[in-house]
Amino acid sequence: MSLARALELAATAAGRAYPKPTVGAVVMQDGLVVAEGVTEAGGRHAEVVALDAAGAAARDSTLYVTLEPCSHQGTTPPCTERVIAEGVARVVVGARDPNPEAGGGIEVLRAAGVEVELLDAWEARAQNEAWRVWVSEGRPFVTYKAAVSLDGAVVVPGRRWVSGEASRRLVHELRASSDAVAVGMGTVRADAPRLDARDVPMPRGQPRRLAFGRGPLPQESELELRSGPLEEELRTLASEGVQSLLLEGGPTLATAFLEAGLLDKLLVFVAPMLVGGEAPRLLAPLRSARPLSHLSARLVGEDVLLEAYAREP
Image (cartoon, rainbow, N blue to C red; front, side, top):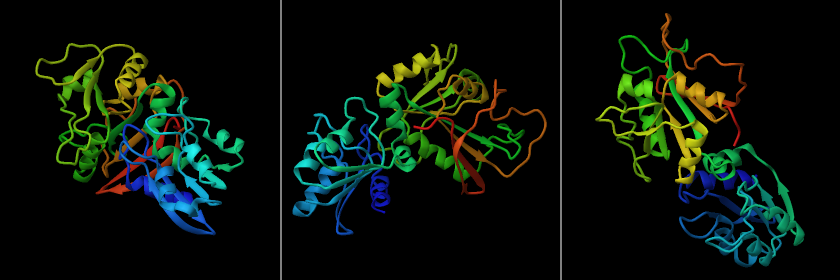
């Protein structure tokens, strides 16, 4: 199916269009792919790139696109106008555009006589998950990263790290792809973390480094203190362009975000060891059980990385 190819195109160019979403598009004619496109950095949208490449073959074609074509004049003209002008017969859309200014493209196309199928595919929504939450809810997409033993301990006596070297490198990659990284004041006092990305590519530069809670910060700390209510702080960060926030704090901070309905995703590195005893666990006690969705697992070195969603984008 060509939506899968459009998703693959967008995945290979992930982050290219930041702070806008990266979108993939495929033009098909008589069952054959005639053109492909991906959103350009500061330039054409994926649909336009693909239609430019298709030329006359775009007429009566099927256009597969990972995100609903925009219907407003922004830095580029509406993609819906171009789709209609080229005589595209059918458009298959991976996910709705949650941007209230740009959405409505499906209705515009249908009103012009273009057949439109909306798949609302999870893969299409997850591909731009941080941007989706930022533009629709006015806050960053929040991911909680933690490393635990097989029995859930986040601290192993006598060891600095719970997870292995491969997992720690991946954490630096996660930092480099996040707009901000944060811990709570308890972690600041206990570990004095740097929270910077090291020894990995950093196309966006270093993330902002935050501490949530009551200060003061140690004099030598380079973190930003955020002492207000969590929801207010997140809205302020979003207004400053922070789309993604990686939490690396302990269970107290993570539980506060989860109970406030502000935690979207969990990344838990499970190390092959048992700790026992009274070591702190992944989360503090919750008021009630919380179901998660889209659970997946993969090996990272000797650890297992579990990924799950508390809220869907």
